Each structure stands twice: as C-alpha cells, then as structure tokens.
View 1 (spheres, rainbow, N blue to C red):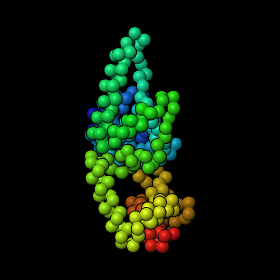
View 2 (cartoon, helix red, strand yellow; view 1 turned 120 degrees about the vertical axis):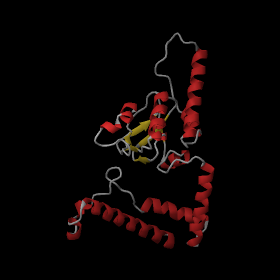
View 3 (cartoon, one colour; view 1 turned 60 degrees about the vertical axis):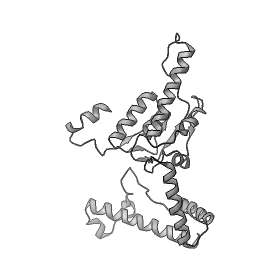
View 4 (spheres, rainbow, N blue to C red; view 1 turned 60 degrees about the horizontal axis):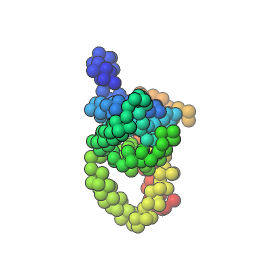
Length: 242
C-alpha cells in the first residue's frame, strides 16, 4: 500500500479516487491498522463485492475507509497472535496482547468507529466467526454511511430529522418505523451491477433516444430513472402505508 501510494504519480491513472477492494479472512492486526490509516489519509473508499468476505483483521482495514460499499460479508472474532515462540513467558504474552488491544481500541475511536466493536470481537473465539448484520454495521459506525467523530451528535440530528418527517406525513414515531422498514424491503435503490456504476438496462431494450445518447448521458439518465422510481415508492408507502 505504501509503495502504491508513494508511486501514484508514476501511473497513468492516479491512485487518488480509486477504491480498495477487500476480500480477506484476516491477518496481522498491527498491519491492518497501518493500512487503515493509509487509506483514510488518502480518502480512499473500500468495496466488498457480493462474493467477498472481510473477516478478522480485515475489519480494521474496512474501518479506515472514507466511504464503504458493502455487498459481501463482514465477520469478527477475537484477535490472536499467529507467530509467537514457545519460550515467551505468559506474562509477556498477556502484556503484549493488552498493548495490541489498546492500540486497536484507540485506532477504532480515531476512525469514528465505536470501540465496543472490539468488545464484541473478544467474545468470539478465533475458530468461529460472527457475521455482522447491516444494522450492526451501522450501529458500530462501520456501515456505508460517512464516519462520524461524534456519534451522539449524529444520532441526535437523525432523530430530529425523522421526527420532522413523521410529523409532515402525520405519523406517530412507531408508525414511521413500520413504514420505513417496509420501504427498506420494498423500494429498490442502488441496485448496481458493479461499484459506482448504475444498473445496465440493456437487457430490457433501449429506446431510440437512449441508443443515441453518449455513455455519460446514459449514466445520468439511468441514475435519474432509478431515483425517480425509488422516490415514488417512498412517497406511496409514507402516504398510504403500503
């Protein structure tokens, strides 16, 4: 990673703005933290494809991403030393492990991720993996939303915005929750075939006007079509409850 970043000016395509694709079952915690800091410094997004997994130390790399696109699985378990000699005393191991956990906790906090994520990691033995739901990812600050330095402020602002929306539709807070969950299940948005690219409508046939558009015009057109569809679905459910 350091080499790619240090030599980015020597490549025809700049590394700045490129995405880091993650598909790893883990590795060295200290190295993962270093990589996470590097990609945060470069404001690089991370992508986990639908066939990919990000497990164990890989989660620390994911935490460093400025933006995240998560389609695959994110799993956690207790960090462990992969290389350690038999002659090392238990006291040294205990102190080294505590130092490692302190480093990981400070790193997660600096990345805007809840340090309690580490507590959840420690509950899972290394020979098992606990896969996190999208709700859990968001709760830990590890989801697709922007990293937040002050989770309480972000949560307060979100709650104020939701109450305002519920009032605008004449809904109670509980009814808003029900309709919002229905929207998540029903209204499809951001169904991309690959990261940052809109769904390919070619299989359904293009109109004559669309066939005459440039790729840039088609991109804008498809995104607008998808956004209008999602917006209509959202308003129907919020207004009528179904």
